[in-house]
Length: 129
Picture 1 (cartoon, rainbow, N blue to C red):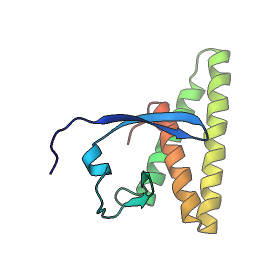
Picture 2 (cartoon, helix red, strand yellow):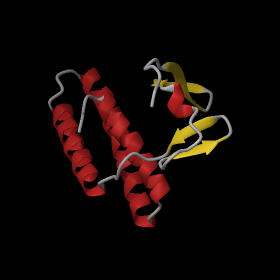
Picture 3 (cartoon, rainbow, N blue to C red):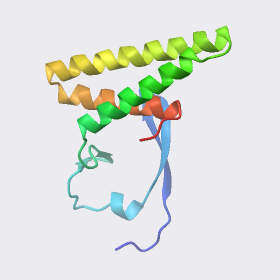
């Protein structure tokens, strides 16, 4: 299907701020026939969903990570390290509260956004599912 395997390098930006880079196979992007999950709109493509999300498994992962981070916070040796970790934990707890509110309101779009952001925040802290 593809003539070559060279990929064009593109940046991903959100609100005029670069959030990542990715490589794209141009024959795939320039194709005229797309199967879901791609959306075709003028000159850009967006991947809206890859696979199915297991909310229960993701909740367990988040809870385990937060418990582990709390344990690390309690065993922090210096006050400056503990203060920094407390701010991070407070941020994670606020995200957990937002996640719970989105679950109660059954807002799936907001719920998916929060799960994605939460997963990224945990990834930055070194937690991988």
